Length: 126
Image 1 (cartoon, rainbow, N blue to C red):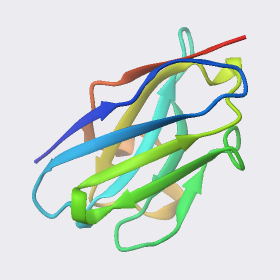
Image 2: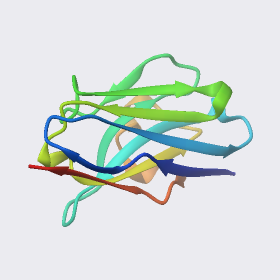
Image 3: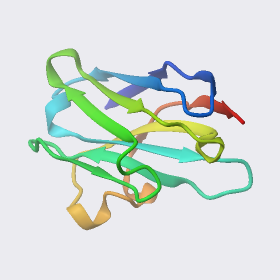
Image 4: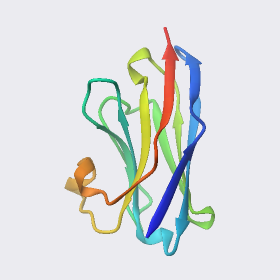
């Protein structure tokens, strides 16, 4: 079992930056693939970024490539999402997610993840 708690959301102007944190409680954190998704009102949940277990590479959704960076700190049981050059279309609820058994092609599929945080609002003002 893994519990996830997001923090760091809020209101930021267009072009600004924000860093989200996801703190995990549970055992064997390093055995989980960790990811960020987001969901805007009236839209489906969208893949943002993921860090596979045992892997040092992050994967990104096309909408955020080059602007967002995901970090993983296994010693702190945490992942972070550094969001730069924010746009109005980045406004959404951001969710942290985790799963133990994912292949690369499934990283962007929200239904493949077993554990979710409660979500945190990010609003980019235009």
